[in-house]
Image (cartoon, rainbow, N blue to C red):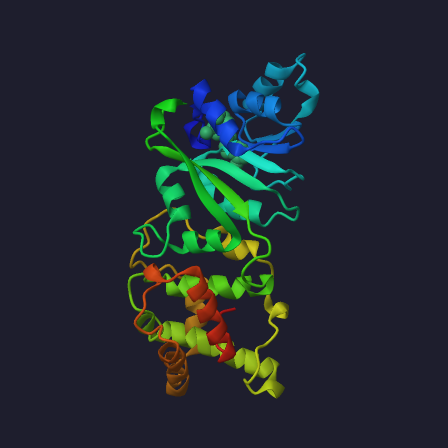
Length: 332
Ligand code: SAM
């Protein structure tokens, strides 16, 4: 019996398993991370292709079944099974990750992998089709969203293969796609800016089809930014707002900030700022009109006022953050 709650849809088409392994470009020297091996159909082919497989599986029944399957075979000592939730465990060193995962962990898993301390070549992962399309979406595409921008900031993403639902047992309700994710080194943005980046994108995509001019006129948002502005002025009074500041002291890690980057929901015109953001906005009180002019001045000067996040490229977002920061407007 398979547990729906754990996203247990087993790959039953051996040709498809072969294609995934082939497209992954595994080398015979590779240590492979597999997430959610289930009964081991993919695991077996991974063991044939690489040097060793480390498989993380949450369901103890599956762990037993997997161990039984490879017991007494030449594969046995090249497979290490870790029982546990991949989102809660420390990731081991690996060269490549290949996985048919439960779709409910898609977004946190991507950002956990991309936050891994050891660098790896790539991750080849099966996702729900629409989620995969969001990962690869470009400015102007209807599925372009914060998840697209955040993932593409940290990685290059390629669509490898469409997979129909009937390749699984039991078949899920949606079609799937296999995607290749290659971590970018170096990142196009300095790592100590990632928290600010996340703060800015949350605001820009809070209404992705509104103009930035309109978004940055909202009182709540201006209050939040003015509060940041004043806090930083108080911390660095000598700089008088002329120089870019070192914010590393205010950063407390990047993973929390992007873990929930997107859950695949359609977020058009839906406010997605969180309760705590709202609280701090309320605390900030009335916004000065001078500060409002400062923000709109930056948008006007660099021609962002009438642009919309749905059409802005990653380089434009990076540029926008840097011109805001130059004007001492900060998002974290
Ligand atoms: N890889 C197998 C295949 O292709 O036939 C099974 C894939 S099935 C979609 C997902 C597997 O991930 C299940 O075996 C499930 O028990 C396991 N799983 C679910 N949540 C998990 C988690 N948080 N950490 C690790 N494994 C998990």
